[in-house]
Amino acid sequence: MEIITRQKEGRKLDTFVLILGIIVCVAGLYSFHLYYSSSLKLREKLEYIEENDRELKRTLIKGLIYRFNNNEGNETPFDFERFVANLFEKHYGGNAIVTESTGDGGIDIEHFQGEELYLGQVKCFDETNTVDYTPIAIIHSQMIKKGAKGGFIVTTSRFTENARKYAEGLDIELYDGKDLVNLWIEDVQLEVEDSIDIIPSET
Image (cartoon, rainbow, N blue to C red; front, top):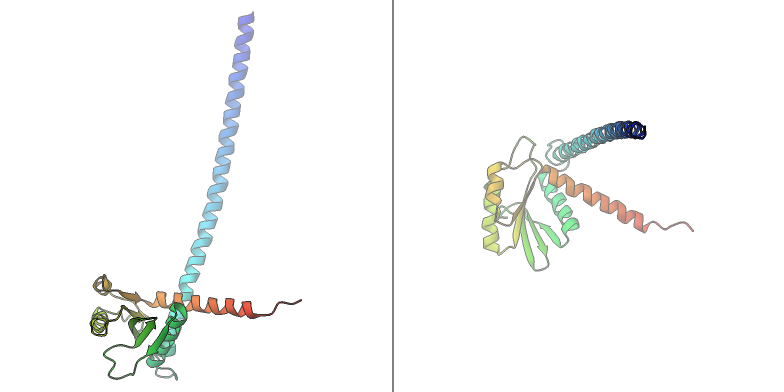
């Protein structure tokens, strides 16, 4: 009789453990479902934000091209050089000087940072007009001639793969349209933050 009682109690314990296991599994599956659903929604939101960010930057690039490379406007590619020089000066410090339009040896900007000189060339091109290795070779040649620390090429379009490979190890930075827009956005954000800092607080 005692053995039968123990067997019944054992079966009850097994049943309880089984039910508890089922509850835990169901709870786990439900938690996983909630996590997966929230992760999916979060991923969709992130993709939406990233796509909007890319679209905004594409629009800004087109705006720069239209502003500085449009025969109908008042601004010219030379104004684009000044725009980039001003941007680099604000972002990296130092003194960025736009060279004369003729007899500059292919150099558009001389950027002095302390005792160091950086030489730059800028290209306000349509997005379909890619930049090859030619301006990189010119900058590198002038770096050697002038004893410059480094160089940079800035364009509103893109660089060819050969151009990027050519620039490796030459201390020449390449800024495509996206990089340029990122610098521009960062500069605007800093200006906004500085403006907020100087606004007197109400007492």
